[in-house]
Image (cartoon, rainbow, N blue to C red; front, side, top):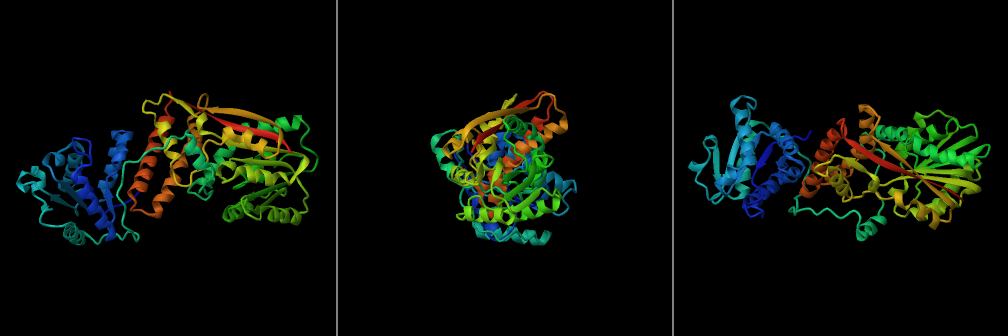
Length: 469
């Protein structure tokens, strides 16, 4: 959990719905405190969209760690408003009850007589914004912190930019999809807990891949001494599970662009059929580099090209498929598994929380193509493959236990905060990035609770495309 030295309490919007003067003054104070490397909480009002319980939980967590509460006000009714009142009253109670033996409240007001402040606030230091500019006020706050305790040193921060209201792009608009189509995903399989999530995902998608494997076997598409390529293998969970015990398969070549992951995969698997190599599918020299890998292992061609949940991370999936096709044997096959956020349904969802999470996910920096499942047929056709078949396999919450519900949530939603966390960590003072990260983290926490309720139903589809070279 993040910790803060200062909590800024302020009214964000006025009665007319516009940004209040209090918010503008609070932002100036926040910028200055950040410039001084003082960890400061600047309340994320967008959390209110998720409901009061989530907003309150976020606020309470920050109040618990703060040493100094700064209450900013230009109108008395703002200081007495519901949420601002909750913040300073909670902090005041903690001081009186000894919960915070070392704490301080400072009011920073303009056009308010200090004697008119609520009684609980009158006993604390008041600073008049008309007489004390922001720089001088922050000097005062910093001195107060020194008296209480030496403040924790925050990372070297740069000045944040003002935050405007965030627009959520329409995830199904042609313009939005076209913009996303030519971006490479910022995804990394070394994300926090990603290895365990991928293991869960490998298990949950087994029945989907079996549809394709059964079809190929019935079609006589798996020759003796077959060579299988897993393109985008990550830790090799899927390759081991699907092909590791197949008698007809002699070699499973697993490639991924992440050297750290490949090194871990080599240590995790002792199956003599499995070979792990670092290869970037989108390298300008891919054909040359991959041919060198095949030659090094005495391989001529690939009999089954398998790739699961990889294409949607690529900048140009069709180009990659065309390049890979050159290494597939004349009678070879390709199996692609993709996902599509458009296939996700749930009920009940009174606040459209899942829709909000999915739409917000599509605005993340470096997000993958979350609508790739519907494109697999066209991508294969455009890349020269033929006899294309597409299967779908529904996964839902009916007839599964609590642990399996949690596993499906972990697979399909938990990772979505990682994109926002990485963007936020690049610049912790960027309010828009921080708001997005806190919103997504809180939304996922609320949706996970919903996901595990007995009466809640959810489904999604895996899409599996099979084709001949």
